[in-house]
Length: 495
Image 1 (spheres, rainbow, N blue to C red):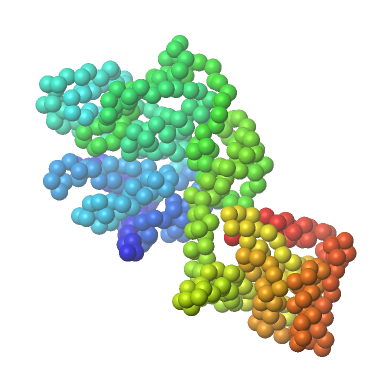
Image 2 (image 1 turned 60 degrees about the vertical axis):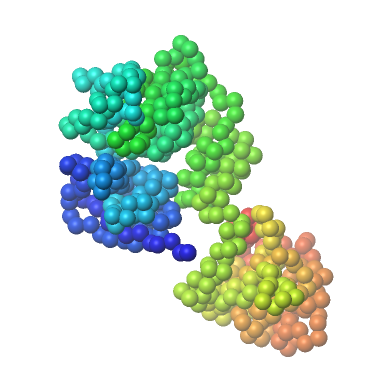
């Protein structure tokens, strides 16, 4: 069953305030957008930027997004908390609100553009789960040691100090990456990830000492270091809150023995979502500059593959989405598409063999190009070992002109016949075209077939060996840059 879309109210140009029911926004009327509950944060940001008119290039790093998150405090009663929306996980938490709380029909998001850090609530007074009482020093805001007493249940049911701000629900990827008293996490796993992240970032090591299912304590592995962190699940909002923090580390940083692959993928994912074509060496340089230590090429490769999978889907998902992508291009841009299938004995079923496509802009532009077509193939990297078939023209400035493409499971005389026939029948009917290709036996068999449209008077074919072909192709680039770029793009290509 298809997932129901979620209505989102977007607020900005106002301020976040607190009332009897918790957090709310005071400012101009909101704008409403409809989104898929599984939308990625970067795509939601793009929609909100368009909606609000925020200058993305200048303000992206200063934009903060918060959600109005309902916490059940009684029958049909909510206390609304402030949830920083900083990654896909926290966004999904917000978009799940209508499905978990049917009385809440609209998701509210607050957009703020600030030059400073997160302007949310600071440390807060909360009640410990069941028998644990929290004692807080009101003069300093620090939390003392927790005292366990089985007879303190009545104290836990008292209202918390209304003058103290409500809890700030955090996540792993807050911009300042600082742990502090009052930060709240969805569960213990989110808290552990945050502590691990800060440890790796600061080149420190810590151990977790769980004192119960709803409590945990972290300490530095070096006994002379006084760094420690205590957190517990709070009864009033059900989140894990940092209630005690002693820092920073007083010990020396240590070189990491082995990097955390999940941490690497988390960090690189944020980067490849915006720049998916970054090379391994560029990612290594970025990691060294921002994290502080070096990664092996194999570690960067594994992390990027995992990040690409998270951000854009895996190979199987790509195949599932390919027909939708082509259909979208057909309906919106007039893309010319031809599918090739391997039929099964049952005609109702077939398997993917190849897909051919050409953009209408290329078809129209080729009329003004030289009467020359160059064809070649490249192996695509990835799970399924597909082949990319390329047909290029040459424009009046002697630069490559992209004409048509195909992705196939294999390159054979059958696929070359299908590819070249589509070019002649669907892309261009110009006479006197010269086809330049490598001396591959499958290509030779197709262009020399009886009735081939690549023979005179319809066309000409010129077969060149690689040693001759490369200098000829270099002729069609005045500086050589366009040839190198095309060759590199084809070599590193993938679906």
